[in-house]
Length: 141
Length: 155
Image (cartoon, rainbow over all chains, first blue to last red; front, side):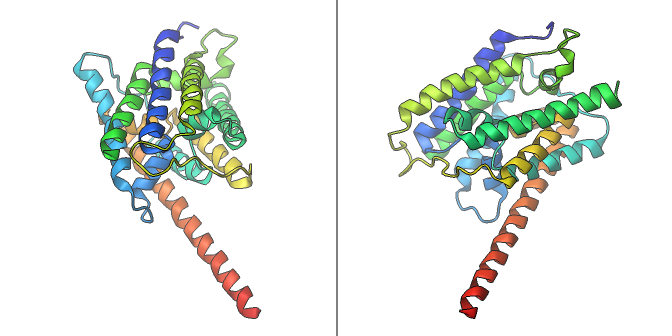
């Protein structure tokens, strides 16, 4: 487990949990990123301002980190843009069909002990683990 | 005020992603690669992120649950309870996309800050996927309404 970074993971995780609690304290909203983002672009919503400012804050964080010399590396992405586009479509369509993603179900939902969120988290984790196993050890291996 | 509050929340959330390195697709895929456990290459960091995130969110939610929010009239706790087909199918599709690249919506959006062309393509595709689902669901809703109207007319 040479890549394991437990301390930064624990601190970062706590901040994510704190952000979720504060959004509930201030605005009474669940911090589900896919739901917040969808509400921003869905033509049927009429409360875009708080959603937009959340997204701005989310993008500002890595910029602020870079300003104080915290490393913000370029993410490793597949070379094939078709794979990236298909993955993006699946993530967008799937998170809305399933009403949530890693934050909305995985953190906020499980914290509320919602059986729906526990089921969704088990399913998306299992699907992702299966895809990585297939890509790295069957096709790639 | 609600906009300023959510700006602060988004910023703290983003800092959490940067500090925990969950913006790194390598870290995320390193966790999802369970076949790396025997070889010692498995990276359990994501599990620790979830554990402390859940600990803070569970305690915090329990404390704030009975109170109304500061900048709105009411808290909006999700009310759905059914473990139905859309939930499970949606989670499966999302998991496949997540496993392909290692990006879920939060880190994908935060990574826009890097101006990585791959991330921009991913986020645009993700937005199209979301809109496609919105359109599909509103059509399904309209169809149900028409059917109900028809049933009522049949009387």
